[in-house]
Length: 206
Image (cartoon, rainbow, N blue to C red; front, side):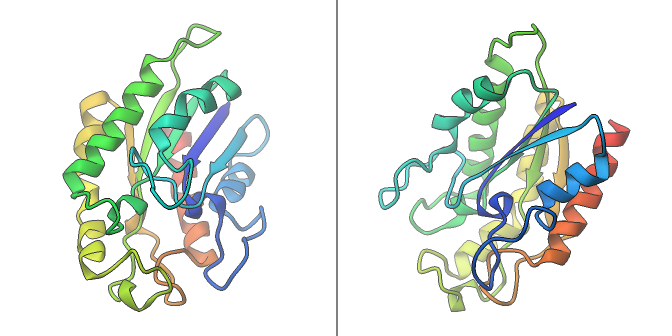
């Protein structure tokens, strides 16, 4: 089974205290270990990546613009995990939860609309990100404030509705993980572990 994890800095594995979590700590690496032989987990995390928004300050962060090439590069695929949306909550984009869900909708349509070499279409799992910390404005990221936190807590039902519409798997990572008290946005290793454990069960039962 080939699994593509298409996400942002929490998929990349940014350590709230600085640097990057080791491969065997990041949720993608732990997922690979839990699924075992026969499963190849492809980690495609990019710090600052959004669903569909172009960041005027940093090039190449528009997730929908990169997805088709990424899919083609890693074809064949059995499962695509879409793990985006927390960066949509930044003030730069002004996206409501409903708008972020439309971004996820576009990503799903890209995955489903591709022509794959083996003729199949991979399953899709939509993963809603954990909310920011309530005091995100006290963190080191100037693009976030209290409204960003509120929006991040409201994403899950919108994401689930889109996932259900297309018959995709859905997982709300906020049910098992949270943003670190350190930087208010990224995850400690315990949250990476919890996400990996939950995803492994979903995938094994799908």
